[in-house]
Length: 121
Image (tube, rainbow, N blue to C red; front, side, top):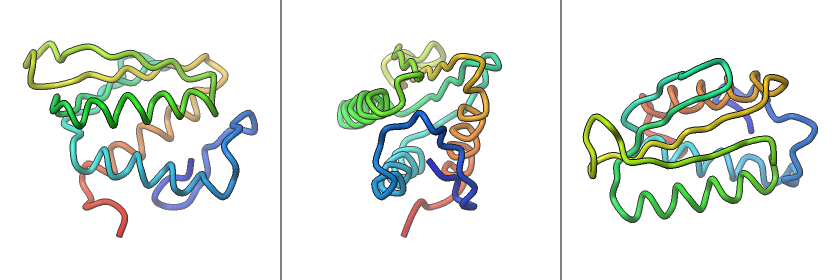
């Protein structure tokens, strides 16, 4: 993945073809711009993203996480209903091993910047 500013945080272990990486980033940016409510760093190796719980958003989020887990198998994604507003929010937890904390940092930057921008043109 690349951050909006263009600095790459994709590890060599990612198996997604290079040409497809910007498309995947755009998918995450669009999801975050449209549906992300909050970004929380639970620990150095865990990021929690609170999204709208609309069934369409949940389907897109789970599909995107599954596809990302296929090319970057070091990611662990889990989903729960938001504690602050059960039924109205979906929490996606993204965890990585210590060796991939820089990648998680990049995901956090992407999420935070996408929340405050209209997304890709």
